[in-house]
Length: 109
Image 1 (cartoon, rainbow, N blue to C red):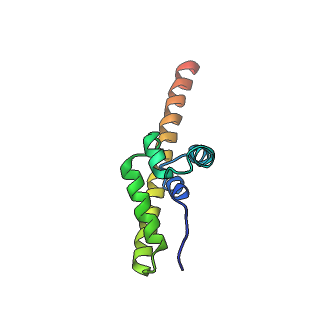
Image 2 (cartoon, helix red, strand yellow):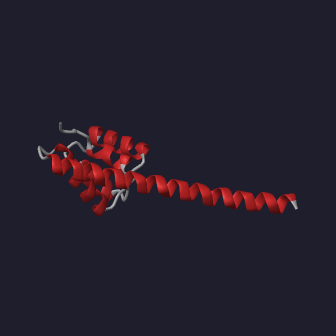
């Protein structure tokens, strides 16, 4: 079973791109720059790096592959990237909670 996931959706799932930025770029491409490749537009707009683009293209190619091994590797990389995103969010939330807790303790004292 092949998975046909768009490049933009993969970038969102990997935590590399915000969905709002993806929607904005897709709309721009549709209305103004239909001849430009979406990934290159996002790199030029500094929404993603060239490394992010190459990673997403590699994952996309693996997911579309006829090889079960290639699909498994692609799914593993996608899961690892998604986990990294979740870990960053949790870390940021903890830091923010500590910051507000320290402020609250200072105000309460």
